[in-house]
Image 1 (cartoon, rainbow, N blue to C red):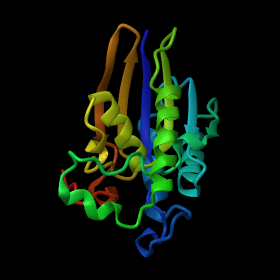
Image 2: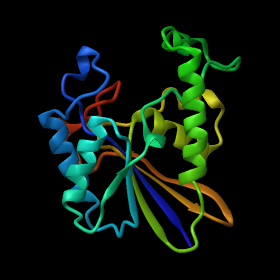
Image 3: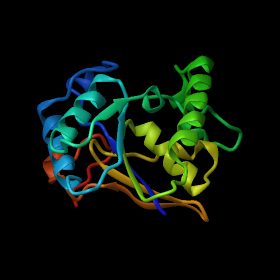
Length: 200
């Protein structure tokens, strides 16, 4: 039996470039959410969960509008967070990222992601398909966990707005990364949220 996790980063946030911590989706973000909902409309989802932040909640509402049998539940396990702090083996190039981040934020993020992995990255007794609408760093941590990378390896793993990552979990084998940041449903003009353009 396989447990599939479909991890979707929220759509583009309006005025995110101005440093706002949260807010509604931009017009482009709405179109991104519509595109990913169309892409996934045929998946037999068992459950859906989303971060309670506005940009993720709005993405979830748009997606589940096309899936009337599915209701997405908010959970703080999918909140935006800092999953871990600096480690001795971390490349020095990442050190400036942590300049304004407190130890309390790191501790809270680590505890959250330990609970999130225990909750979601688990085998199932029957085939299950779960939709998780969340944030870039959360998805990066799940990918790092599946690949067994060092703690700092989530840094530099990036997901576009409404990019799709799929993980398969089975009881007898380690989890498998089926795909990461799949953008096939997004035309070039809707590919946002990455540090470099994704033209192809």
